[in-house]
Length: 159
Image (cartoon, rainbow, N blue to C red; front, side, top):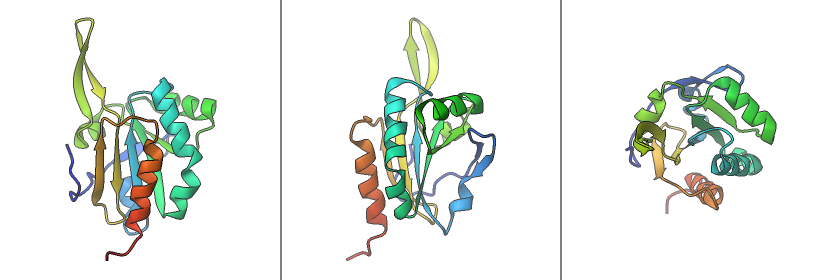
């Protein structure tokens, strides 16, 4: 698991349009909210992605880019985005490499089958690439409002 104060692991992943996004491209320019979710079109994943989309303008005003990550492929992300009118960028971590770097994978057993699953988690990363908040096993309802407040605090001077 990552902790606040640690450097955010660097990565490059394809998005729903098969364009590569590199986290380093934000360094010195913008903060990032990186939210990991189990899979496209699942009820709580949809709720969370729509909520981030609905508040995207507020995050943008706080100099923050929102990035959703799951192990689904680019085509699945594009269908999910288009079906629900999502505007946040969805990244495909098909091999689970980035999910492992961020400590959001865990083994779960269902019907006698062990499977690597993504734990719904969110990271607030400042413009210098430092994890400021690491939120694991989150509940979607009200989560985006909480994250928005955390991001807004990044812009406030220390007292």
